[in-house]
Image (tube, rainbow, N blue to C red; front, top):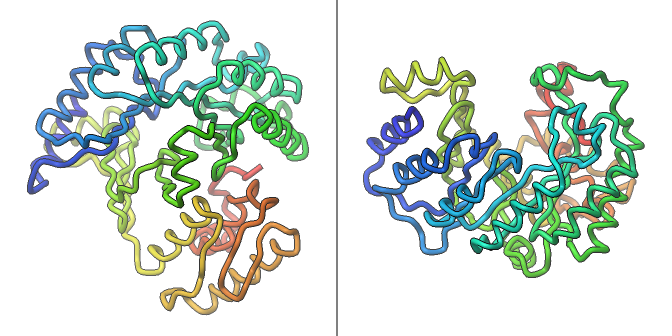
Length: 370
């Protein structure tokens, strides 16, 4: 298995057995593979490592391709968190995005997760999908809150057809406009909060007894490439096609096609294709953005920040302050309750590379916040 060969390359570089705090099995639909294959993968990764007593092993699943055996066997090797992709239950929306799945099938997987004692169940919902309406958002959230998962991620649909060919089945005319998306988000947020879920950072909602809420309340929330997490590890090793690794002061991404990935693995070299070494300013800005996303506040008073950039960032933040989204006290930034829904926009105001690359060149890099 190529992924285990990649892990063996990393293991040869590590001076001792690594301590594994988290495993996230996802980035697609791992349950396309059989339970036997998944166990072979996990056993191969953990057999010569130390698994932390308070580990969090999570798996991302598509209910249509998940069996009770998957849930049972993964629980047997330490998996205790599960995330189910739903997006929307409206048949017209599901057809447009080529993801037909029933509520009954989703409920069955949730029931299995509870049967095998997964201590955190997450459901992914998306607003802004093609042909989606306020009524379909209400319908989907009503169905999901009836299951009472521990967490719900309520994301804005990212329309990036220049990157994802699968998003070319429909046109922009089929997508809700920004005002409609904003109404969808606010409607969903109100329904989730009415059901007992509490807003955490960006896009996430958790019940008061979930570890994500506890971490947020205690100022211990962290965020990495996979989203919010309750652990503080600054080292992530990404395995597999297009995965991203993070050593805190550097990022590296694997080859994006199976053929190129396997070719490098078979040569005995790491299958890296992109990378970035963070300079001192990058590290400081990264810390500032994480503080905004996890704690709703930060301070920009570092000597590592370029003065011209700092002044321009404060200017952008003051415009957001005029809209009631932040409070700017010299270089101290506090996100208001109203601003919680605009964390991405607030964070973008202090993202030096975003402004240097995208705003000066006019080249579109990312999807819109709303």
